[in-house]
Length: 85
Image (cartoon, rainbow, N blue to C red; front, side):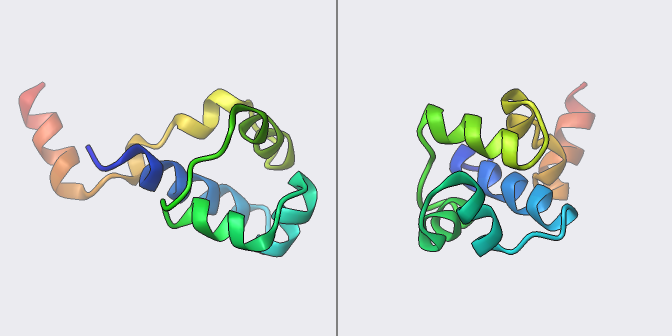
């Protein structure tokens, strides 16, 4: 499995884009700097529990849903997992 920070970041980016938001829009809604959102989406930073809650609210999902990123893994990893099942 890829690094959880990278997968989490991909999930945030996916949800943000689905809502038609820019990184600036999301940063404003969760009261952080644009650069912090960029660092989260690129997997460089991981948000605090409080920020995870605010991200969930801003992206209209439950915080636990931010950790549902199995589909964002590489296809080779998914194929291997299916073969093992």
